Length: 176
Figure: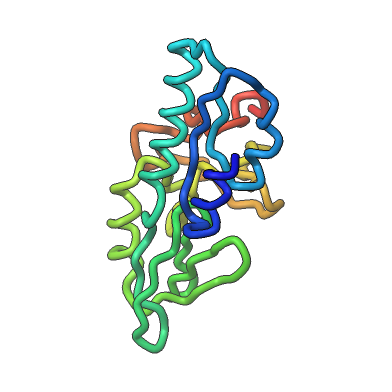
């Protein structure tokens, strides 16, 4: 645990995976931001789940929507923080966890980048929602985890092969 503490002091972003013959230090491992704590003998399934989760986190780091906001500044919004993007009265609004950014580029340009990501769904004309933020569907509305609601297209197909009722973000299956 001392070595892990020294690594953490040098690099707070370092993610550690512990392999130990005892669970004695499992709670302490959280102090150094351990990604996983596995107890020997390690089962293949446990190792596989740990590495899948760990690798997914690494792949997500630094990924996001690149958009030019009003004033000409380019920003990258991490996908995990992006709730939805909408076009309203010719203004593109990027709704993130704790703010709304106004883009200085056309909706179709932003939408084109979102369509490259499986997690985004065009639920209505001019609205792309991040399916990771969907809590459920009620009537003709998507309910987001932060309580906001978005209208679902009633006529015609929902854009993409995912289809609004075919999506299965984490915890969503029970809500439908």
